[in-house]
Image 1 (cartoon, rainbow, N blue to C red):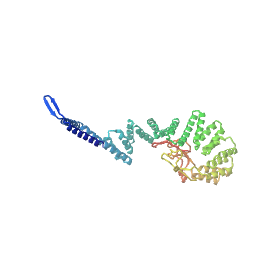
Image 2 (image 1 turned 135 degrees about the vertical axis):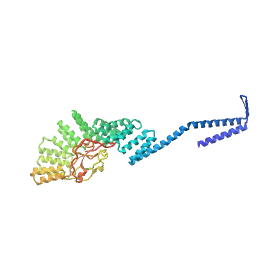
Image 3 (image 1 turned 30 degrees about the vertical axis):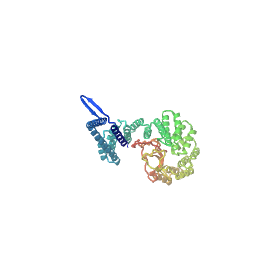
Image 4 (image 1 turned 120 degrees about the horizontal axis):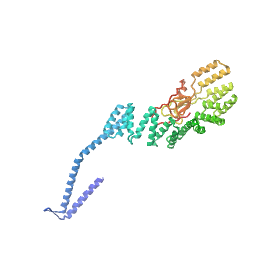
Length: 488
């Protein structure tokens, strides 16, 4: 539209000029070097315009001749760039389709057509990973570190490789470098926290957790649970260094943040007991029993009242059981106290009630970052009443029969049932499914932080009888991002 307006304007000016010179012809005389030219003003103007047009045409032709090679090269470069981007796109599609040969072919074509390595390094690295050549992939990711525009992407590729290889030291260094580049990136903050926790760098992990909470990378409720577990580890470290006062303070704060975990509460009570503060120690156990009835707490409670007579111990355990009267562990603790006091009838009554009480819900194995939750997803827990004998209850019944009636068929029957009974609850990792008889802040099998739940295994709920898996050294083959969480 603008061009049409300009053309019309030029035409109008030309017509106006022609009309003007026609109405005012005038005369022009030019004398130069013996030459004399006489003409009208209109003819002179027309001649000047013609000369100007000829000069412009000559200049345009000269520029065309001089610039042709450059224009040809530019058009050729543009064609190569378009073909290179097309090959790059097709290579990415081949990677997504899982076709390593096609991806490799397009990667080479894109690399030959595009004179911009950052665009092809990622495709080459992904193609190498698709072919299973981790060495070549590492070479491409390392090359990406040398360019500011691809450094962060290269760090993530190397980080995933380190995590799959279980090299958490290298992964931690790479994550710290990524943190300096993009400190507000959620997966970087979460991965740094996860790696620091796995490596037992509790002070650094607490600081990173605070940053993650502030940035809302980790939900506040889950962050509070993580912090409680970290405070438990810091308490253990303080006690190991001889700072018992700080250890007790940290243990109390830990118990308040993770009331569903038995081990931090037992740790707190034991520290108080070591200082001969039996009253606060007993109250710590009783408070924990309301949400986490567990054999470990019952053991500590027995140590608190070890100097009492058997009958007085029964009364003490009645106070403990009153905190959570419907729990199976309450009946078991009272039954053991009654056995110690030779109250056979009372012991039998509580054991029979324990046999009817449900065990903790069955926990299915969750293997894909399920430990990112402060409590397991509903799909991870099988609801239902899993009441019935477990080896521990069978052995207590056998002990009762033997102590009350002496060795006999009843004792042997309960011992036989112990061999085929549904296994007792144990700590199950929501990340790898590994089992442990002791709670730890990190899974002894995969190293996941805060991922152990006190649950009945899912295979036990279906009637299986598998042994406890031996606790192994932590390994990690997960890709990013990850942090973990669970409750006891």
